[in-house]
Image 1 (cartoon, rainbow, N blue to C red):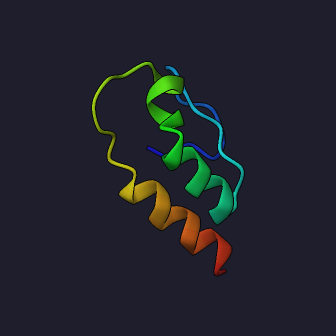
Image 2 (tube, one colour):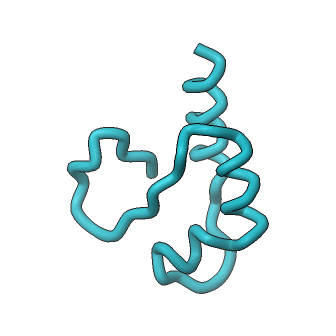
Length: 56
């Protein structure tokens, strides 16, 4: 879940609002490490929200 205002409780992962940063995070599996979860993480909604933000 994207929390742009950074007010939701729990653990979070920071991501620069750029497609290059998203690409590197996915390649390095950084979301799993940052959120301390094993297995695949559904990042489709994050990518979609980032794309919307970048395209206006």
